[in-house]
Amino acid sequence: MAFDLVIDIVNTPGALARVAAAVSDAGVNLAAATCIGSGERAELHILVPHAEAAKHSLAIAHLAVSREREVVVVDVEDNPGVLADLARKIAKAGVNLDLVYIATRNRVVFGAPDLDALKAALADRGRL
Image (cartoon, rainbow, N blue to C red; front, side, top):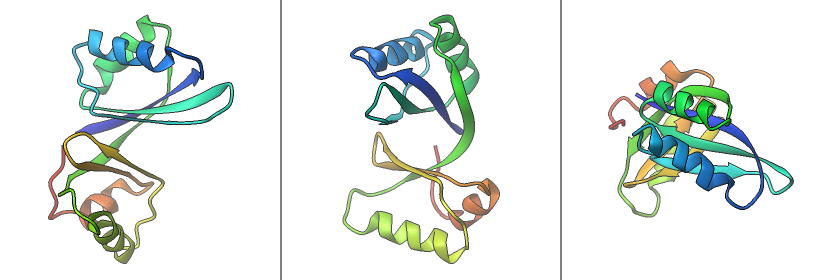
């Protein structure tokens, strides 16, 4: 399983370093990250395989996880059109996405309100 954790951070130099250090201190691999927000605060999404250990270490560092959910991670080839093909497949299944980002090792992270339908739409694809 893979989990997307959302941490609301103060958008200052070193904020990402604090999060990354807390996660690594827990021995958890940070497989992806994306940050949204250009103002004083930002929403940092991180992809981890072990949510509880990461959340515990983040809490010790006074960094609160505001949201957590399981996501689907798909191994892909780094070629033009791969994301378009996956997105069409998901759309054909009638699944509405509310989260997409790229992870390490040529993987795409997908989140949807209906996770079971998303998993079914991508059943022939690999996951983290």
